[in-house]
Structures are given as C-alpha cells and as structure tokens.
Image (cartoon, rainbow, N blue to C red; front, side, top):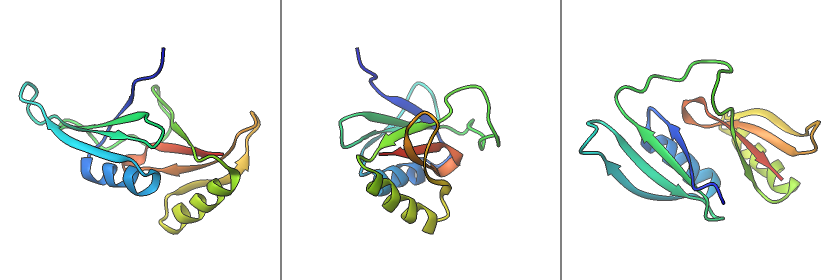
Length: 126
C-alpha cells in the first residue's frame, strides 16, 4: 500500500501551482475543469520522487481560517540534507514565506516551516 496523492483546496490554483513548481520542482499537470460540478477546477502536480499533490479550487472556497484547526496540519517535503534545508530556508525567508527557521525538533527531524499560498504549512526536512 502507498499514499496515492494528497489534495489541497486553494483560492488561487495558478499561484499554488507556481509555488510548488518554483520551490519544489513540481511538474504541473493539465488543468481539469469539471462538467459535473460547475466551478470546480484542479491540477495534479508530480513531485520529483513521483508522489503527487492535487490542487483544487472552486468559487465556494473561502480564505483559510487563521490558526490551528481539525484536519491535516502540514505536508513535509524531504530535501535530502540539512544543507538543502538551510539553503531553501534562506530563499523562503527572502520571499517572506519562512514561518520558522531550521532546527532539530524534539522528535529528531531537521526542518524549517514555510507557508504556501493560502496559508498551508509545509515542513522542509533533511
């Protein structure tokens, strides 16, 4: 068994797709427009390791609520090394997207946390 993909609602499909392509090398798939659910659009993004992320939008999607809430808390992307995390953290900081800088967590992960469009948290790990 393996995880097929993770889906993320967004208010700006194109900005979210650019974020994942720019910062994580994601390959952006074709836009899907539903004929059964008017206003629903999505794109699948393929990450370098072959895993997938589905970005979805529709006119009923509100801006995200601030703070923690029930549901998925974050997605973690392994960059392969502490040096890669450090370098990415510098890039994210220069764009105002760094939430917390690189550190070793209590459970042993070397990570930084960044914010994607619409506020989704992404842990970048070694």
